[in-house]
Length: 339
Length: 290
Image (cartoon, rainbow over all chains, first blue to last red; front, side, top):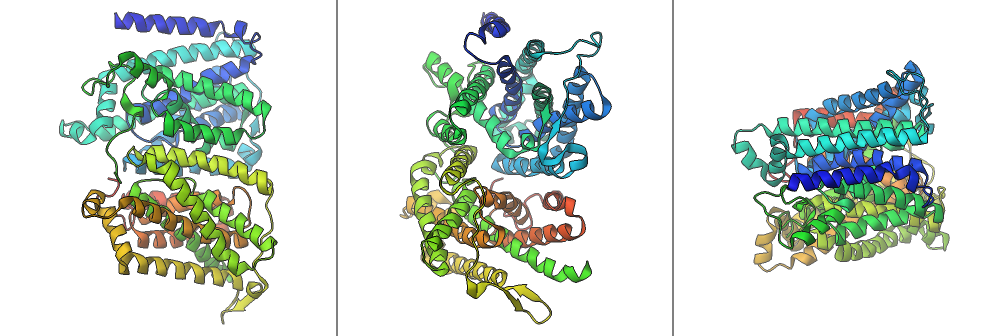
């Protein structure tokens, strides 16, 4: 019953999104903005897996996002690869980055993990910034959008085609994400979020679980970054910066931490809101900052999380938070220091 | 190149002193309340701009050096009481995110008031020029910076170890509930502690404005090295922050001299090495932040 309803929601959402190119002219939105929403959702999902489900403050995911963008940009520029290969190259670059950083990040938990993520992520920012000969430095890299690739070697990808490619990747990622977080592996991640010590006592090597979660997260962020680079035909160092990581976390909180659809809602509001507000006023950053403050102080469950809580009208079942859909990751936790 | 070595080493140590004092301010706030203050750099920038405006209106540099940080403290404590306080009971990343938002807003507000470009803020005539140290000449202002930062750190250490209030602060870091149960108003502790961190940031901000320049993002440029300092020195250890800051300053200045392209990356490499050997940082304490 439950699974059937979920499937219905999923199909409805995909059908709605598939109508995007028809709807967008009516509301004066560029189709590439809708593509950006779908692409960004993947990066928000990557933060969600670590922060919303596993409880690790992932403030460095822009590193993997940016590695994805640069992986695509470099492979297109220097190896003249096709679209599909460029995305794979971006994803591979991001996973490689996580493989290198993982052993260091795994050394700590809690907010310390967040600090390490921010700090280590900056390495890639400075590499992109400094190695001007290869990466174009501060100016970034312009690169053309290559043809699709296998079987469709000479099919050029225009904005509408790009949107449908992004939609397919988005749909696959959402299904995969759902499968992962409901699998025994995903349940273990949630258990780690709730009480890592207890999971250890059960004999599970939590480091290994977190490492795999980190790799999956990097994969998602890398695909997102590669598609984003191919969408705007540009890769620039700020994609790797921790401000970008902060934006992903904001989108996750906005939509609802630990909820699958929250990532899409958060990305949708953020990307479209940014597009609208930044055309009205150059002071976009003040709105963004205020949104951070307001979200954290007044709306920590996010949109989907709050809706879920409303619908249930009861506290989240601590025994089985996932089956109660929007579980409690975003809500105030009565532990922590300085109470 | 070798005759540049000693001056460059000294420059590195001055830079390291900045990192140390910013890191100490961050640590103070982090240790007591678990708040990672991403707006710390904004308070430095604010202090710099306030000092700039004060000097522009005719006050002396010396007055600005004290007044600007104090105004920052007032702003900081207001922010702490209204915006940070509700987050103490939540997981630390909420306050990180909130203060990150504050820093975004602050940056744009600085741009509105003082313009996007950097503004010139030079030290007073008394501190201009260079002083001979016997074996080499070194800019007087930098010597002054080191002196002020050392005095500030010593004063802080004295405050924390030799006064009753400092004692309570340190006790609260160990066990907040216990100190509250013993009748100390912990909210006062939080506010004063936050103000103290901001005061250090303010002083560093004014001095940094004179040495490193002043622009809407200048304070944030010191924030990341300060985080790395905290990680290298070990969370919860003020002494660690000092050692960490000086280490990073030296590493950056040396790589700037020999491998300029790697100057920013060097501190992260240092951090990776330290973490591999000592996951808690050089002087990190057991138990704090797991």
